[in-house]
Length: 137
Image 1: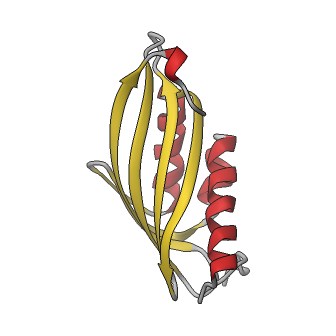
Image 2: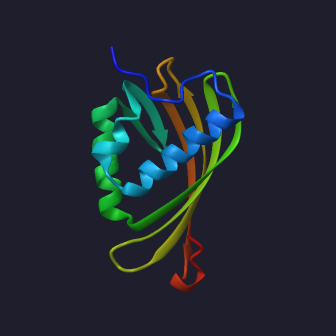
């Protein structure tokens, strides 16, 4: 049995905001080893058109992601929550190996287990090519 990953559900406004900020901070480290620990061993993801199952696949996915999405910077915003679920809006900026910058926009639906680990993450994401001078993050 894993330890608790605070805060745990059911969430209040304060603890939901803490959970979103913790996720933003972790993803901005671009450290797949650290980030994957926020998810259950058997976590289930849909990320764009990728279906990912389990913490090990999450780690592999994030490793590849941050090898391709260079100088990645993310901002998350809580849209709503209830009991053990959250809806989150996000945007992030990155560039590819040729130097083309992008701003990626999306929405995530999160579901947590009783110990505060994310057991489901469903993300819809769109990419917008931008000029480096248009960066916001």
